[in-house]
Figure 1 (cartoon, rainbow, N blue to C red):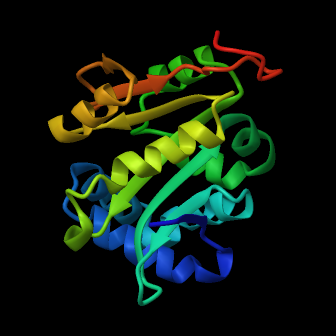
Figure 2 (figure 1 turned 135 degrees about the vertical axis):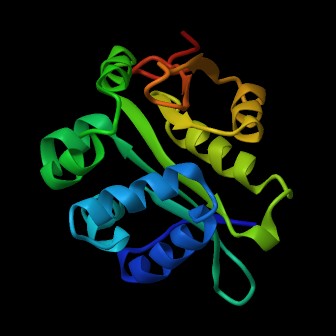
Figure 3 (figure 1 turned 60 degrees about the horizontal axis):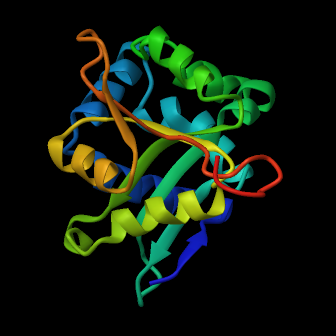
Length: 192
């Protein structure tokens, strides 16, 4: 299976795959509730973020033999989103996003990737695809810190197995913080 950058022209397909992969997660229900409170559909609420990630080339995916998107990663460089994608930044980092989490993200440095979502359609799960997608990010962006907030013991264990540090986030934010410090310095000379 080859991991490729998902072109913006396929954004609608990506959104459908995202919703299909995430609809059984607590975080998805929370995002849907936030969108509803603001009088929007989930698509309308998340569109600035999805579009920003596509523009930056930070949506990667795997297509099956029928050219159907079956797995994806969606991520954003913190410095890029803050400086160039104001609507996406505001959409991502306002409550219920825990303010202490943003502070912890900054402690990893501005050259940090925030992993917004990883998804594998149900019929392709349990084949190591999510691990392959995370390793793709680590290989491509070894000079960056990588961070995500995740729930679920299976997800936490996968990140632990891949060398991420796991921290408990305060009770008011029911997720775990997982992060991977940069493995290379800025000159890519060696391991820090």
